[in-house]
Amino acid sequence: MMENTETKKATTSSSEFDFDFIFHSILLIMGNLFHKLLALYESFFNLSKKDKHQIYTNLATSYRKKGNLDKAIDAIKKAIKEVPNNENEKLLKHLADLYLMSGAYDKAKQAYQNVLSNYPNNSDAIIKLADLHLKENEIEEALKLYESFPQQGAKKHEILYKLGVIYDKKSEVDLAIEKMKEAIELKPDEIKYHQHLGFIYESAGRHVDAVPHFKKAMELEFGQKNNVFDF
Image (cartoon, rainbow, N blue to C red; front, side):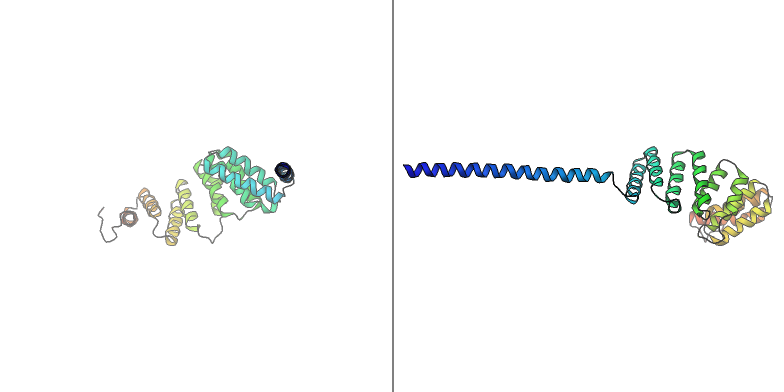
């Protein structure tokens, strides 16, 4: 009987020990977790500029993909503040592109101009700013920008084409034809180049010169390179 009593006491004591051990273990774990969370919270306020720049850039990309351009613009503005002026070419360009996507053309023009003020050889900014001027029929501004485009580059044919469009608008037929021909020489399979040159010739009353380019445009568009078209 006494043995059973002692066994019960031992079991009870062991159970109390196990409970106390588990309870204090939980307290210790929770305490450690709290300190880790507190350290993590404090680290948020001690992020490096590089980290903040990356976070804001990622946010801008996420917002843009979701179609929330206002929030994307706000995030990029914050990212720009976190990097030195000589390292923010991509961010400034990104901001200008977002304004363009949102239809805020005046702000887009200012933003592209800001890119070019700091990075005058940014060819994409040159093209997009010039395109905006051309879209709004600001011919001289567009012409100046297109003419400033680097002489070498993958998009040179596109610039020559747009110069041709501008000279056509200015009724400077010879220059328009010259630029269109240069564009075609660099990219002979571009349909709109042949079409536009054909229209320029036609408007100038040069039907014979227009025909080959209209034919070429149709061949390229319909894949009928061996067919003969009569006009």
